Length: 521
Image (tube, rainbow, N blue to C red):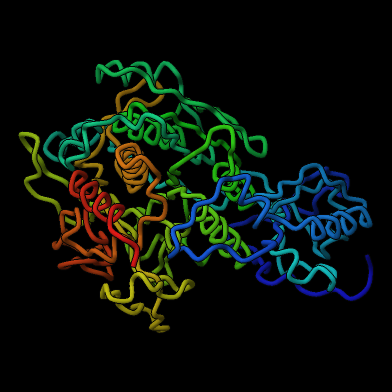
């Protein structure tokens, strides 16, 4: 396949100032890339409520065999091998040397060091043959820079006693939020995405036995060479992994959990998400993602390919819960503008923001926006600069961006829950009891709630957002009206700090049950 070449839309990369470039990449190094292909047919209209099995989805909407054949010819013409083809995930994994990859995609790969990690890095766009325009939608894995960060905050053990806050077990928080108690999530599988770290089985046994609960079923799934590798440091990604499993498992103890371990790159993150969505072995019904980064740090092809995967999840009835970030309305970017976190900013996920929760005697006494003005973190939230306002938010009072763009974008978060480390979650990490917060805790909390709702309703709730926004703030939420995350403030109804608010689980179940039994309009 030869002839004219075109730029692959959205593939442009820049070398960040913090990267220390040390030379050219080894031309003989063997590497693998993931090539994402287009859908063979448009996805079903979400408003129809049609749900497909994973096999049906692959045959109707997966990669077209002709597209797969043409990409294979392109790969072989450039000395690359096709080592995996996933029709449902619309992805092909190509393997070859750095030299062959750079010729195939007309790029230059360099060695660099960033965040104490040796990586490959590139700048500029990729190119593909003109005949494959529209067929190839993304190429991931040439550049291995860290793509995301975990959104957990561990309370410092050295904090003076006068400043120490309170902490709660996950079942206690579920009680405050009136999670349904008739079921335990039996028959559901919660998928958890992890880009590093690991857990110790002994920690889970200690944690759940302390709650007088059986340790839930946890299955490790390796993606792109990732694996369960605890570091022994509770401040590392181990804190994220333990938090996710312990929160989700404690609020939905009857659910199975599948933990997808992968590498912290745009390729690894995407491959883990798509593996979980299309996993016909574990049959995941809800996915918890507590990793992300500012929209401005992602390529356009990443934003598009991840968002399309989330749209695929809708057709399969899989709910995606994503942490909204822990660095307030700046999302940790120091350019003086507001930023939101991706993948939480996708309009096709349930974005989960954070609150500070005070409770006693099994009931909430007060709940405000999580914002520790002393530098301890604040809930992410605001208005996307990438994704336009979705139709389900059109009547919810989402403001235009506070940035000079004044973009009318997707507002986030959609929902919230306790995230303040000073009102945090009791966990066990690397053999140590620990109190942890961050919006990382809210995503698995909501994933556990959704597993309970799925069991009670007898079917997956799937993409919740249209139902939540159609019924408004009275439909199962504690409305959070006090506090801010920097550029945005809370207020009655939906706001860009806590969304609709924290859950009232039994009321959500009642409203979803009523919606499920209502005649179609």
